[in-house]
Amino acid sequence: MLDRTPAPPAAWPLVALFTSGYVAPYLLPTVVGRLDAHLPLSPAQAGLIGSVLLLGSAAAGFTLASRIPRYGPRPLARLGLLLAALGYGTAAATAQLPLVIAGAVLGGFGSGTTTAVAASGIAAQRDPHRTSSLGLLSVSATAGALYLTLPRLGGGHWLPFAAIALVALVCWPAAGRLEGADRADGAARTDRAVRVCGRLPYPRAGVVLAGALMLWSLAQNALWGVSGRIGAQQAGLSEVALGVVFAAALGAGLLGVTAASALGARLGRAVPVGVGTAVIACCVVLASHARDLGSFAAGEILWNAVYPVVLSYAIGLAAALDPRGRWAVLVGSASSLGVACGPVTGSLLAEGAGFPGMGLVLGGLLLAVAGPMTAVALHVGGRPLTPGSVRRRGGAPAAVLAAGAGTPAGSVPRVGAQELEVVELAPLRARPLRLPPLRVLLLSPAAARRARERTRKRTRTGV
Image (cartoon, rainbow, N blue to C red; front, side):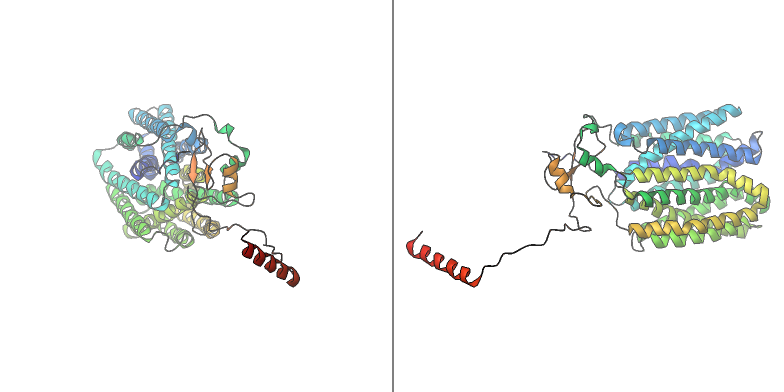
């Protein structure tokens, strides 16, 4: 039987899709700020529209988590980019609130679709952390350039939406480099023993990571959504000065991700995730208490230098939980849910407790979730599952399941495709095969002498 295992997708289309999906959350402060300034909305209402946009993104991830192999990454990526361009373009083309909200929701669903496809593909890479770091580098550079450019193009709520739609159109050619849908008949025909291999590994660790990252993202984006207001109202900065600070912060993020990519797995995942989250908590408190340019810039720049580093390791951790990318998509969608609730949470906390009180609450929340995220990183142990390896907790070895399914020994059918595909297995080093004890029957001395005599007689007679 021929080996029909697909090679991992190329990295640059996934980086492009990652950029298109994440650019909307990165531009959230200017989106919320311009909605507040140029439409008849209060700050809390503008934050709610930002939350609705990101809720659409999270809904797409939860919907598509297990359906990407069925429909294929290429059609879904094209659908996501089309919805993003159409939705954000509609929000940019009109000032009527119902259409702006509908366009934001539609565009958010498109961004979530492209992010889900990118997360699934990144999990299939040989080095998911490196690819996710490249994606964060790309989106940080894109958002930084937009923060420098948009304030010089004039006012109006439409500019950020138009920029996000333009990024989606620019990334359209990348979708053509992905695979289409599987064509053969149904995974329902696979053997039950083979279907067991398709269950989500590390279920408790995955749920803990998803919940912790949701709260982690909520705290980050609660501050990010009101950072523009902190700089303008509390630190007294102009929009141009704010754009420079945000661009410098995203530039620091580029340096941070570059350093994380160079370090790779040398520090493991527990140290960057745990210590990095604690540093972010301190930065959140510093930025929320800022009353001048220096303290505000210091808090924002240091925060944005550490934030993408921790996020890149968290994405790599989710990818390590399942090489098929399901946990990567689910954890990313949980993160999007936290991102969606961030702007309205930040607005409500700022109105109720002021910017300094909001910072203290968010810093405490970040310290609270640092422990569970570090525990998951220690549990996984930095050894990612790859498409060429299978870990099973009990039951028959994978080679036995493969032989029972009619495939060559040392291979296992890929679950989720519509036909039986063969995946070569790497040597199983983590769980060696345990054989029963060997029993040896020893002859008595008399029986041994008789056996030697029979051997000599056969030798002499030539029998």
